[in-house]
Image 1 (cartoon, rainbow, N blue to C red):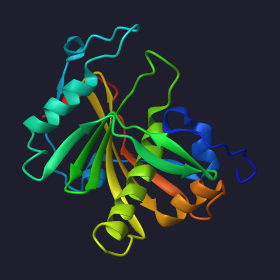
Image 2 (tube, rainbow, N blue to C red):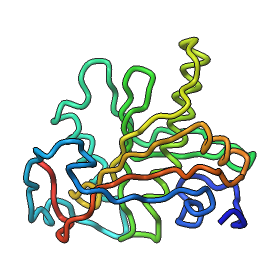
Image 3 (spheres, rainbow, N blue to C red):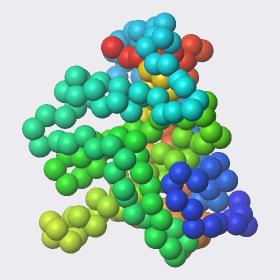
Image 4 (cartoon, helix red, strand yellow):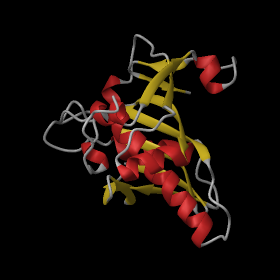
Length: 210
């Protein structure tokens, strides 16, 4: 995989090729391991009609995700929900853009990313987009720590992420490190793999956790 060609692509153009080129793997875990608790609620089902996907236009998934996060108390005082926030990332020596559909900002730090799965509209890879957005968020967080807060940069951080297909969420945890940031910035193959952890999928995808 170290011989794969790496190009300076923006986040929306990342595919499985970039994941292989930068030694990024998807790891499936059972739900109890992923969420670090065996006491999980049963999912709500049969919500297919809650979101109507129209190929000619954007769906309401992003609006739904923002309202859901607010309703669940993820955006109290001191936290902000932003849509389409522009994150700058160095890719193969050139500045490129990554724009998550929704990001949750805790004071000056991005702590959660949401990306809609738009494969019903275009051949986009939501997992590849999510990983480059997480790398860009980690880079921005460290830049803020150094330039604004006067703190040392973090060597690594686990960033929580969600992809949304209609009303159905898929959860991820991405352990982003300074090594993967350096590799992507220089167009190099990192020695240590970057892991994208996610729970094993249920057969029925149209679910929403209570």
